[in-house]
Each structure stands twice: as C-alpha cells, then as structure tokens.
Length: 407
Image 1 (cartoon, rainbow, N blue to C red):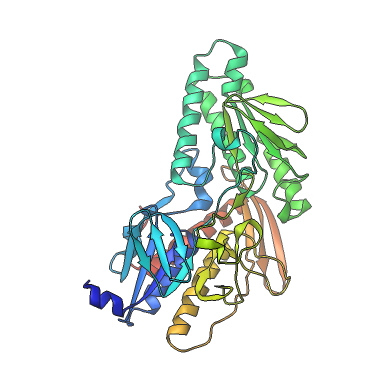
Image 2 (cartoon, one colour):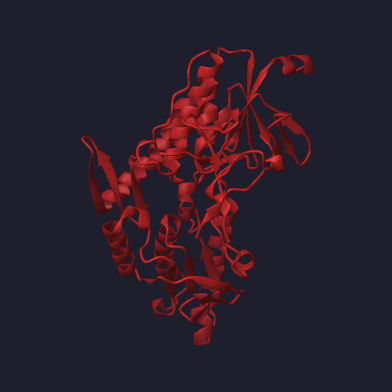
C-alpha cells in the first residue's frame, strides 16, 4: 500500500488477539467490508489465538489450544502486526513497538492481564505461571521429567518431593489445574511404575472457600470432588515465600516441592505514556457505558483491560471469557455505529453461567435459564456443557472468518 493511500485511510487498531480482541477484529472486518476508506489492524506478540480457558488442559498434554492467526484472517482486509507493544501515546494516537510505531484513529485494547505476584519473596523467580502456551508446555515437560526422575530415585523423601505438586490460588484456574494434576498423577504412576502413595497434589487458598464468587454451595461441591480425586485442600492459608525447593505458608508450615504453580491473581500492565488513561483496581481502564476510555472516546477497552460496570449491580464486571466475547462484539458494533453516524449502544452484561472443569468427564457449575431461574450441576452433564461452551466459541470464530476449520 502506497504511503499517500495509507494516510488517507481511517485506521482501526485492535491490540490483543485473545477472546475479546479476535472477536472484535473479525466482526469489524465483516461489518466494514464495504468501507474502503477504513483499514483494520490486529496487533499481537504471538502468531496465534490462544484458547486461554483451556490452558490447564494443555499443561497436562491433553489438548491443542492455539489457532494460527493466518487461519482466522485469511481473505480478510486485516493487517496483522506480530509486535509487542512498548507504549501508547493517547494524545498523539500512536502505538510504539520495540521497532517502529503505528498510528490509529480508533484503538481497541484487549491485551489481557499479567500474573500478580504481590511482592511475595521468590514467587516470581521460582513459580510456574499459566498465562501462555509456552507456560503450559513448560509445566507439561517439567511434570513428565519429575515423574521420570522419581521412578529411579531410591530415597523416599526425595521421591515424594519430586511428586508433590502444589497449586497456589483456589480460584477458577487453580481449581482446574489441581484437578488436571490429580488425573495426571495417576497416569504418571502407572507409566513410570511409581507408587501412587508417593504422589501428592496440594491446593492452597488464602480465603475460606474455593472459587468464592460461585457461592458457598458450589464451592463445597468443588471441594468435595477435588478431595475425592486425592487433592489436599489448604484453605485460609497464605503463601509467604517460595524457593526452588520449598514453599513457606502462613500456617507455620514449609512444604518441600519441585513444582509450584501460581494462579493467585492478576493485574493489568501500564503501557500508556505519562499515565494519561484513568485506571482503577488492578490497573483496569475506567470506561463509560459504551466501553470507551474516560476522556478518550476513540479508545475502547474490553476484557481484563476494561473496568466495565454492571448497570444493575453497580459492581465491576468480572474478568471472564464470556464477558470479553460480549464486549468484543459490542465494541465492533459501536465503532461501526460511529463511522456510519449512529449512536453507540451501552454495555449490559449477560451472565450465561459458569462451569468449572474438574478433570476427566467431571465438572461443576450453573447456567441461567429463562424467567431468572438457574440450574446447578455436578458430574458428566457439567463436562458436556463445558465442552459445548468451548465449542461455541470455535463455531462463532468460524462463522465470522468463514474460511478455516479445527483439525
């Protein structure tokens, strides 16, 4: 594209190819396919769309969770930039990369979040995290190596330390990781002929309940199912420090381990120059009802990046994939509305439900039904619903892109 032609266009830039970002960019391309004066850009540091809600399965080698960006953008008028954002100048409307920059007329921020280590000594240096595809692969390879080492370790204590897998954080991700570890340990002991009695899965949660936002009843069911799978749950316990060989807890206990996975919280990285964008708790961007940043109506934030408020409850919308998908669609519609001279639509979150995978064919959760009713479920039905939810996202991506299929 010639420079003169490029400068005449209006540029819409979506930063982040996660659930919200990929939904927004594909919907924009579809709605603006006849608007030749508009150029759409997608920026991401990876060349794939990551199914992040399934990373816990990738960590135990059960599933492929990356869809190549080229499959999604093929034959779409979208320019992809394989770049890591260094900073954003909202006044000059420029995104700076390590090398080069990109100007924008509209910006959609869908960068997701980063692990929050809360300044706990040794946590950043020694804990495994589960943010990226590389993280999942590292965990999988590490566990396989530890199982192999344990098989030839004659000393009982060292063998048990190799097979003690600890998860810090009893939220959604932590619970799903612990459940998958429980299944993996059984396979590990069979494959490497190690005694199951030498293996241990420990889940540490600072609060009194696992996945507390689901309510005490579902939390109790989750705890019961995890215990039945052999997971030791330590609630009301904080992580105080971590080394390469042990974790120190607030209960005055030290557990020796070679595997500690931290899922205890997130925060949003500050990439705006001079802190000009107003942010709230955990660095989430304050947005209006149409998901536009305060004082910058041409900048939109979605997913983890947006401090979107639920108009019915007055509370922040949780950081969950279902809300990122809703926000991605809405922001695309609102940018299209602005370009075509129409009014934007306010965001009203729709709470569909939530399902927590507990490994194998087991899940716990709830779903909203008409007339403000909801049902809860435990077991095989839950796993079917979880699979259906995951498949729905794939089907929606196929509908928007119309040119690829999962293999």
